[in-house]
Amino acid sequence: PLNSITGFSELLASGETDKSKRKEYIDIIKRQSKRILNLIDNISEISKLEAGKINLSSTPCNLSLLLNELALGFNQQRAAKRREMVELELILPETPVKEILSDSGRLQQVLLNIINFSQRNTLQGKIQFGYTIDEENKKVDFFIHDTSEGLTKEEQKVIFNRFMMTDDAEKTKLEDAGLGLTISREIIKAMGGKIWVESEIGKGTSFFFTIPYEKVTSEPVEETEYEVSEEQFYNWSNKVILIVDDEDVNAMFLDAVFQDTGARTLFAKNGLQAVELIKNINKIDLVLMDLKMPVMNGIEATRAIRKLNQTIPIIAQTAMVNQEDMNKCLDAGCNSTIIKPIEVEELLLKVNHYFAN
Figure: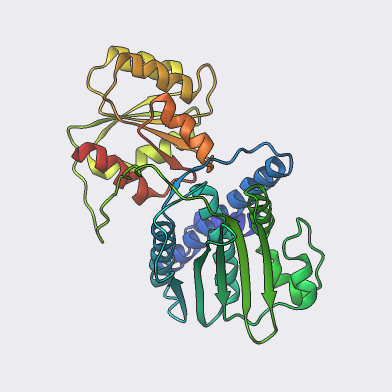
């Protein structure tokens, strides 16, 4: 991926490419950058999982809502990429269970890893996914079926392995599985479940995994919903946003995101500077807080800010995806979190939610 990023960046820098080619090259650079970030995250993730250093949360999880959101996201992505040949079909039980106790973030991660693998290998037809409840054995059975060309017996043996040795014919099919399926296996194992694959050449591939089924007895907590429109314009000319990040490039990116909104941006390179700005400037309407910084980290800074101001919205920027780490942000006083690499529209929607209210 790095080779293509460097190569296409040089072509763009030459200034000799037309407008349509520039867009194509930028899209390639974005995709390959995400691929590198994903690889780095996966390497870190699998090391922690195999060392038993990640704790799973047990919170109410609305399965139908979770799966519906995945299907919606996939189909929006499919429409944007004009991949009309492949359909994602969600299959729910006749009587869906309302909520179970589980780690919804990790569950979503497993489903995404498998669906993404199926998507890459299914050129036409459909991908079906869903779940059933096994009341007798107290477990939830998930399935993902695709109409890909299928996997050989040898491929099925190594597909969940951390390191795979394959010949050239198998390489293309398995290389992008990367560590995603290995991570999925470790997560399901940590949850007390199991995962496996069944496939036949010419007849597609099916992934199955199970997790323990534990009902929720208390009232569920309502989740914040963000309205999404096809095209949104923001006028925040009377707003001030404090960007807290020790990386200049990250701060430049966030400043560029807000450039067309009219918002004024202030900058702090560490948590201590952020606290001082909150002390001395009354007119700060929202804080974008990085977590890993020198002098004072984002968690410490958020706690200090909350002693000064209980109402200012604080959005934590985090590369951590598990529920336990997100809970640390919320417990410190953050209103919400946004996962790096940051999607521009998601960030704008979150900020607009707080400004609108």
